[in-house]
Length: 518
Image 1 (cartoon, rainbow, N blue to C red):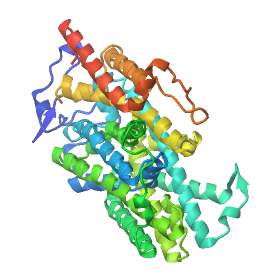
Image 2 (tube, rainbow, N blue to C red; image 1 turned 90 degrees about the horizontal axis):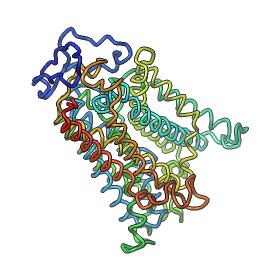
Image 3 (spheres, rainbow, N blue to C red; image 1 turned 45 degrees about the vertical axis):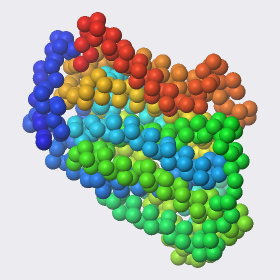
């Protein structure tokens, strides 16, 4: 069922406008022939996707998640938890639970995509205002740029390592900035390849993910079979007991680790409308994501543990990095197959998870000057300039500091989006007004103070207690705000719950005072 939302003239009081009855339909689009023309808030990339172009199926969404989940950082999640003292069963359980939890906000925010055809920054206008939406959009863009740099560096190192085994001598090349120039060459070429693919647009990304997902899955299984055959079994790692047990020592590590694992995909729980806007309907995005995310991440965690266990039996040491494991073989075909798998796996996740979102977010900042392709290029440059590879130097810095801080802030934004779209508006939006200054989402000068207040309070509660062990992070040992330190281990949950409750409370107060929010 498809409906249109006709353009309505701006009212003197935006809150007095009445949502069109058609907005309750399954799929909504702008009235035929109406195109928002204010270049400050609209361009071709931010406008709703026409219903006839919302064609992504369940398989497309499942393939998207399979392609994104099968990457080196995902593989290394289990090793990071084992390094913190968990056994493999505890690590896999933590990862599986985290992905079941994060699926819920993913489906809730993803609902607006197939229904209205809008990307994340446009959805954020309903709660934050036409101008205020730049606040969550830029936070999401900054996180994505950092992730883009991390993934690109990891991919470049993987290419460098495997090509070094094929050709030899690469590691002994002259150094630039403390690294062999051949490593910088691999990094640069990989960076350029990623941007070239996304520059061709979302249809090219869909086609790439459709065949990349099964290829990477087959590659991971081949790696498991190879190491199991060489080991004659899966080795002693599976028999290693937990250093933490299941008692008092386990929970202080489990809870912040769970938040860190949630934060791994918390970025996508915000900008998933960037993809679901191309969905053929709610069934496609719900089933596609449900089949693609938690099952794939759990399977991949198990795969990483089994392969690493086999490597311990073969080489006498647990090799968690799949690139380093493949590099142990002297078979040229095996090395080249591993190289292609690493390339496709890293490109698959990096483009979808870390370029699409900031491309839309930056376009939303200045639609007149920045297109989707321009935003993608800016993301590529920023992702290199900030040198985010430093964040992966230790498990403590990676899981507790980086993922914990990111999770707290993004959880806060997710709470506001969910509260506004599901509780306040009951999924009913005026599509035309999302692009019109002076409309119902203009609030005051383009900003909704309720959303900003909920974000500030929720953000402070979520990350204000951030702390680091002495010498292992950027925060003071007692926390940035000492009395909030107990909340720091639950940053994502604290941010989401507190911002959601506060936003609903502030909205309800205004309604009781007689001021309409919509």
